[in-house]
Image (cartoon, rainbow over all chains, first blue to last red; front, top):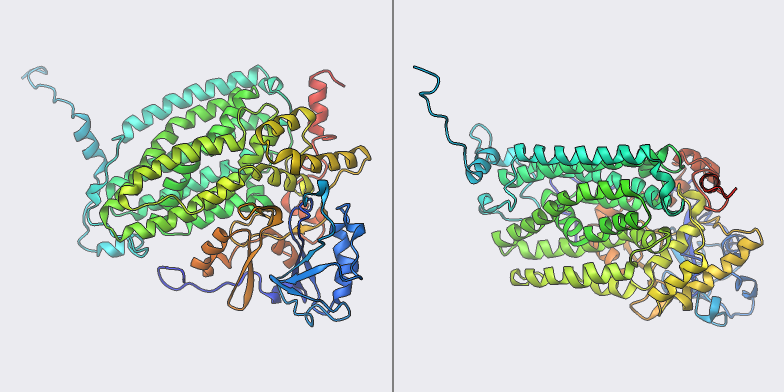
Length: 121
Length: 506
């Protein structure tokens, strides 16, 4: 549905990618690890390798969870989703080549790690 | 002829007086009425007879001034007495003052927004009955913001976190939640504003906003705040009655109004609930002595009282808002999830947070037997351990925000039985992705995407470079939040230091 208005209503895309100085926004969330309160927002160059997101960006946030040091990103135990669809990232390719575009949500799931108290916190 | 021969005219009775003093409109002849009142038709609401509006209070301006004047006299006498007796030293604990900081930054500016909004719709309705009623409510709301600012200004003499409340309301990240709530209402048409604020907020949710703050004040020895609460409460009763009258008026005028009104009730009950998340954490965590848990308040004021109201409106074809089930499902989790978020992002907020002590955690276990010990106590114990090691946890990252309610995406799939899994919804509009905390916020966006693409999301604004810079000190400077004074944990704060001195503990 469209908005009902009196007169013209200009479209004002407040967060279009051109406003982020060459970066795009990427959100990253960790499933069932609620100690980290929400997915976090990162302004990143679209050309950044996916591997750099994992090794350089994500620890800045997820180091705060005691499970994080136990996550093994190499052995295939981490399940990834991109905008709600499961996917297998290529760590050597860039975000954009992996299909991670502006305001994409990346979630990772570590089914073997159960969070605080073993209940997903 | 003497002075006595002319008999003094009899006074008008109340009914005639009300009519003469409120029905001041006329049908214009030089200008088309639709040009004079250009905003009361486009929303699709059909009004056949504006005279069908009945004011249950029959309030006229002369009696209004008299009542309000008397209430102000009492209020200011008590505020003076509170100041002279150093009432700020008699509260239960200085942590309590953070609840007042939240009120002044998050709620009082909404009173002002309500004032502006009601003044605007008082201009835009062509019926003079509702115009006068809205005008009086506009004045009430202005009085509320003034009395609140005056009352809390006493705390500003001693405590941090009050000084820049208006500036903060416009800039600080979490205050975009209440601010955008009212911006949304005030940029809607006059009828939607009336349902949004006059009905959904004033009638359905006000008991969950004011009563908890005022009973919290009473339980924690803050007589000044209790008094402005009482002073506003009789106005609130009138506003509630007007909100109810407004909805009945719209529903009785034309059956075509029913689905439009239902859509607004669904939207604004949800929007209001999201703002009340701030109240939930205030009730359960910020009050040293809590009279009632959030869950108990929700059960009493919504699940009992408001559901009874909706039963009353069933005869018009109105049903309980579709979000009620979600809210009820979330009541065991809401306050904990919100407090966790503020605890971790406390570096960027102008009030203090802290870990609940053992006594508080036991109270929370008792009030939330199904969730607190299982999910949330372990979190506080983990953070408590870090605190003991001198590593109080502050998140360095910026959260993802919901496009509609603007709250960090902290809500979980409670309704689906997965209380530790963050809920994510997304949609595309004009080739761009948009993210939501819930189906309800997504629905609201999809009904009017052109409106919500304009959300001023604090996190995105920081990354666009519009908030003073990209580092925390730069953003705090732009916020006018003094680092180490207004923000961070209560433990170690200047507020705590002063309190301990007052109590002879240091």
